[in-house]
Length: 489
Image (cartoon, rainbow, N blue to C red; front, side):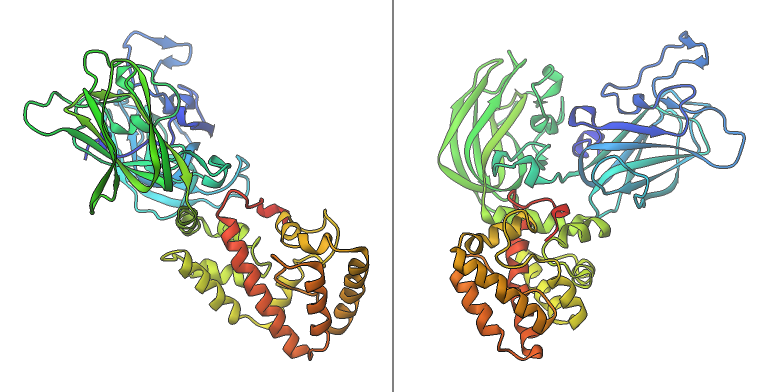
């Protein structure tokens, strides 16, 4: 496999990648690691510290230890391969390297837990050292360790993009093929001149090199590229950009939806393309898809492909399962606890990963909850505000779920307040009910009924209400409407 076939560089500057920190950069700055262009060498160029090198180079180490640098990925994801390029470092390259990953929000890495992605491995000088990474966890930052010291020209971190789609597509729609959304090229008929990954890159193309161009086809057929979308979406608009391709643009293009192993359905019949232009095509009616195939007839170059659509309910659910399965354990627990305040439930769900699909997640949630004891259940109950308390109490989810209660009449709200006190005095816990879609009067009626329960029976009834609430919130968690887990539950 060539580097052009490895998938997008998640650390690329144009995606937002940045070198945050290095323990030493005496001879050459850490920022050089992510320069987009290939390394260069000028035999006659020196600085006041020594030979100028196009890379990151540390001083000669005279004490135990090793050197390192930390990179924030432009797009978080699951790393598949890493290229440690030592071009032009011949007598000053590191003997070995290793790579660690972390999944976190923000750049405060003081307490982050690093885990191994690449064990300590030998390097060759003046070479593109390619390593395969076997990983299942989503990474936001990587730490490159070099042993004991030396210089690295470039670092490329290839993998499967996995951003937080809830934030990227906060309105539920957008370019679902973009690398920044989580779209990825799965296959292409030809990569002779440039990588098809460029099609999904952010921003305007920079030149003919910054697109996908195939060699001249001398036989029958046509060229194509298959893209897995960030999530299933109803596609309603497709943009094909041939900027900078003037004598080598395709004559026509068409688009199919389907699956790599199955049948394809044409949603955009062959349309004429022109040189150096952006063309927008409507898809009417909108077509639900998880994969698209761009066909170019017969060959040529395309700078960018944009696939606009609205993520479907099933798309959000499938994204949610992939995203939760790939989280580091601590991040998973922080996210999931917003659905149920029991730490035992969160740990049980964490340890049950991976989930085959969203229904399996819900079923596992039920099973873990059913196995918990009274103390774990009461811990979950205490995370809820009292029914009928005014806005500002509890999380945004709780406020939305209890909308029917807080909009009740003054008489009903006073009765709820009185009932809550009686309930807590009798059972020692907050009155819990799946309030979604219920009016204040309906909740009050349930409150009076359950006050007559025996404590053991009421614990079981409250547990069932929590199970239902948890299911509702798991559905909310994986969609843009989900609030930050820091809001509580």
